[in-house]
Image (cartoon, rainbow, N blue to C red; front, side, top):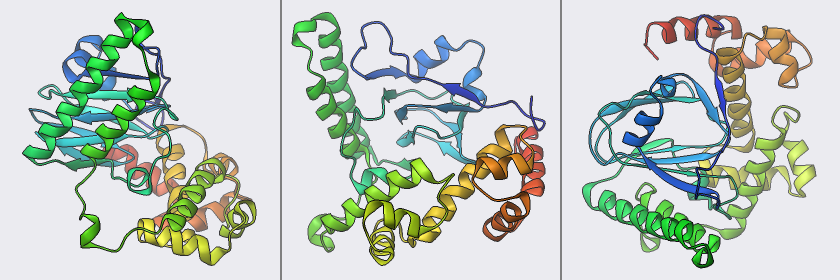
Length: 295
């Protein structure tokens, strides 16, 4: 126990027997049967993707300090590094697709910025479940008959599933076409932020490394996320700070060093500006809320 609540568990991708291709599918029922100790209800941080579809039932999921109610049609996308827990999935049924980073190449901006949880209507849910079924059949064929295995085909089927399951958006005729160059700029910036946000705190650092101007990064980020490049970077640093404060017993000055701040005072100023509360106060409030189940 740390900070009055369970510590985060690091989960590494470990394919089941017959699942050597970097993707596999199981069900909520299978997850429950494999996890008799209910460790799924404790904070965990996977290094792989999980895309889950709730075909029936209700429940709750928590990810990065937000609670999401689950019901028929709910879709959940857990990204690598996200701290989450299945707080209540006893009545849920449906598929969970696990896949390694890189197995789904060339994520578009829409995929990379999709929310953690959203809802699919009956038609879209049915089509998404059909896409999962196709993926499962090809995967099972590859496991039973290795000479028919095609990682490329599995990757394309996974991409088709993701596209089918993503939140519905207007058709290209309803809105201006996304600028491909701006999309590429944002994806490069997003990847760099994920890699360097604990070291580089200024947009100019990324602009220099990527070979773009600050204004170019800002325009591309605003088009993709609705916020500027600096706000996007600050929110990502804040999220990592909250993860450290919530799921480790690292003192505030240790968190400051881990996140690349000169000292605890500088870190506290940043955190208070972004979250309207000090790191210590936020940690106490989070620990209390987590202990009482009020996340």
